[in-house]
Image (cartoon, one colour):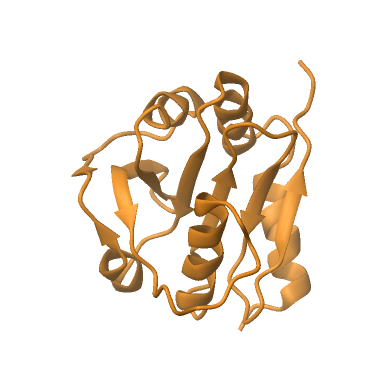
Length: 153
């Protein structure tokens, strides 16, 4: 099992200013659309995903993620392959999982984090439509939410 500290550093490394994922989240934030992005792959994730469409051999770029975020559903990124695998997805975590979050994206992100908790490679990113920051939910029994302020360009 990965330690909580090393997992936290991994999340911060992936979202450091200048990284493709951070740029994608900042583009989404700037366009005011918001998004729910799941980073990972596997059976647990597929079981909690419905609808949308599969993308094949679609290389991950910040600009593609921002464009896909204009649709209503979530986005799935396979970080190991460096590709976007699904878009416009409806994530269906167990609604009986308690959450203190109030927004739909963040409630879903937290529930997905809890429900896929034993999959250390799966992360969720919630980007609110109108807010000052972004949040990343990681998968621990009580998932931490990292808030990131957008960098200035």
